Length: 486
Ligand code: NAD
Image (cartoon, rainbow, N blue to C red; front, side, top):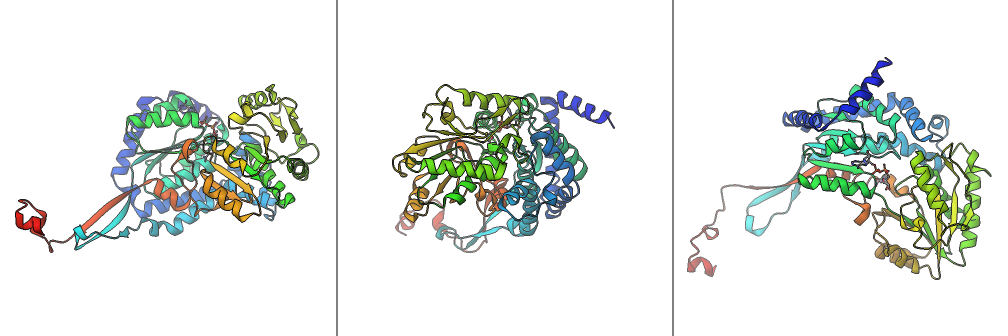
């Protein structure tokens, strides 16, 4: 009924620390009954998520469209998944969640099985194993840029590991947040899986409680707040943060393929509003003009001669973010450095793919994470110099290198520290569930995806088994001279 959304709005506003404490109490009680630990419960919840995603695909697409006007979302069912762009899109959407469920359902028994461990001479005779146990009540706080997938994927990990879970989606994607709240009520066991909507006051109320783990996706700035709140209760955290992800382009590359993959990793990926999208490019002075031409062509192929008219490009998520990007573009230090694009429309929150050449290192554009369609290109004398530039900045969530030179690949992998990497591509490493996804240094801590999600929400308990045989008196006092001789 029409009253329902209003009631939900009211509920959201009144959610305070007392309610949060009650919620945690309730979830802990559920957890202590042991039901979330059972294999059957985990399977039933994972199957319900699969069902929810299949049955409500249209609602999910509509909510995403409302929040971000993601272009192909509404159409993707009719698109043959034949090219990399539509595959990526489908992936980031619903396929990503479906495949996480599928993998968890297939592997769960195996993941839950205690892992045999070697024993030491001191414990002979004995056996040992590592038992993965759930942590208890966990909190997942998510972000707006992929508001469905980045909310549900960590929840899948928490459920897979047998925890009671609260999800706090981002208020900046309100349609998806409210849909998640509705769908979780409808499909999942509300005694152990909940959604709490809200922004800072509600999140603060949640953060005051004692959780057994907090899994946070968002900005490094809020990452500090999360970790400070967690420290009060000695709660462990996973922080999936961001940073400035560089792409280094050598001059021996296949230029057309390189340009296309950068276009995909920058503008197709949510118009740059993605944590592992290319933040800036480093290339050599000589090669920059060719690269810029190829990127211009690549942008035109994907978004037409006027990208502002393209239906295949996301808008900027909010007017705040638009203003932030506008001020990055308008800083006097980068003025006149635009070599491609530059168009914007405040009313429609649209910014065209925009490339800058050689902006100063101390400009805002090179100091903060861009998280939008602006792409600075920095030139160096020698491609190896790019590594010093990357290493002079905080460690990024992803780093990319395009080259045919094996020595350079090896040097890059060995000398650049980043959460993850892709060589001769962008973004795609996120699709490989056998690779951990997470940051290092200021881009975060901990990781997830596939088995890593299960591990992120489990405690690895060390268990030593002994029998009563083989007991030696040498171990026990008094330490007589005879014993000391042994
Ligand atoms: P954000 O940190 O502003 O918000 C994320 C969450 O934190 C939201 O749920 C929000 O309600 C909550 N929050 C905001 N302010 C808070 C406060 N003062 N106290 C408590 N909670 C608060 O981040 P964002 O703008 O939504 O996302 C952009 C950032 O996220 C970028 O840095 C990007 O790189 C990063 N990101 C990382 C990943 C990843 O997987 N590593 C994925 C997407 C985005």
